[in-house]
Amino acid sequence: MLFPDSEERLTKRLQNGNKAAAKEFYALYADYLAGICSRYIINEEDQKDVFQESFIRIFSNISQFTYRGEGSLKAWATRIVVNESLKFLRSGLQHELIPIDMDMEDEVEEDPHVSDIPPDAIMEMLSRLPTGYRTVFNLYVFENRSHQEIAKMLGIKENSSASQLHRAKKLLAGMIREFKNKNNPG
Image 1 (cartoon, rainbow, N blue to C red):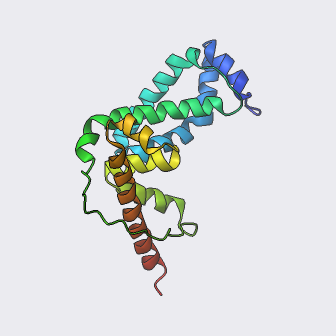
Image 2 (image 1 turned 45 degrees about the vertical axis):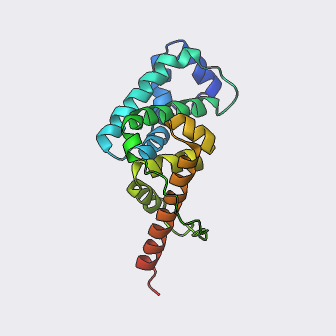
């Protein structure tokens, strides 16, 4: 295929049950959506299961999708992958979320510069975060969700979401400093 369909045309073909359109959709978006899934779920086998479940949900619900302009199909599919990932994590997540420590330090850390760190190193650092921290961080930073929305999605309190984000950032800042010291001894 030299010229992929516009997203609108691809949507119509998918909604008509066109198998070639399903293959085209997969070719266009699979890597991107797998990356979204891997931000939330670390175990490769679990990633594959959630990824497969996401595609089943995408293809079985495509008739309910309303095209709203270029990028809307990708955004809709992304929401499904995020929701399926959260659904997978939700049962075990409550045990992973660390209770709020009322004596938690409130110091403001300087934002570490990450532009000189390879993206795969950043992803590896994210994967080392505890599940609760990583989930809240992903929802807040990558999905642009508010603490109120995150709290509702995960069944936690807003201040728990804020605490998880604060701690995730603190851990990541430490990992970034460690990476820089290791790779730029000075």
